Image (tube, rainbow, N blue to C red; front, side, top):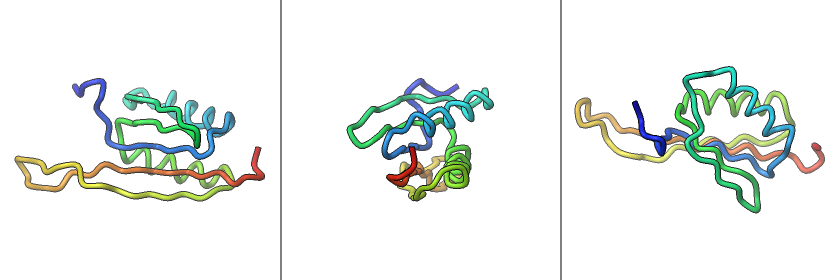
Length: 102
């Protein structure tokens, strides 16, 4: 089991919008094995630290289909698996809502 500070992905919602946040919360409730390890409220929006990067990428695509906005996905090298020597990445999924959507 992973520690409570463990995360594989950051979902950034810009700006923070009640409809978009509720959409994300509803998707998280559907998946029992995925948790939010940290939520950071910012002036520009909110960052959700998620335990599964595949889920975060899929959620970003669902947000793009459901709301008007821009989706940016990036990854950063986090470390290297000692047993397999494979690189381990953390993913950042940024969904930027268009201004006229409310």
